[in-house]
Image (cartoon, rainbow, N blue to C red; front, side):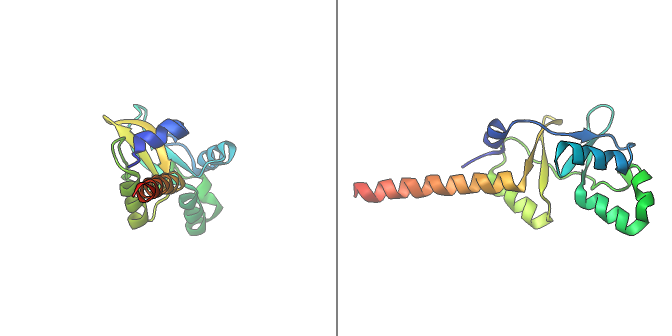
Length: 144
């Protein structure tokens, strides 16, 4: 069964962060420039405070108009952040993402942010698990 640790070994540990006092305009620029859909919100000591997604920005603009872009990230971010750890299975994180209707989970180990897993990462991991299981079953059936 594939774990978060295995997924991160394949995809890497890159994760983009933003501070809670930065503006939504700053956040939108970060997401756009990096081609990502979410940034993890961390305080000055690197502690995870929340998550800010494209959806959060769009929702703020729809509620508050263009002035929302001047609002601090802390006013709009999803908090507290739902996180996972290296030992979590792809199946488990996919269940969490589905139940909570989220597309990204920051990965924490000993309180330190070490990566981020997307729903696409989790789905791919589950597909790989299923392909491995089918291969084992096929091999078993051939040897019988």
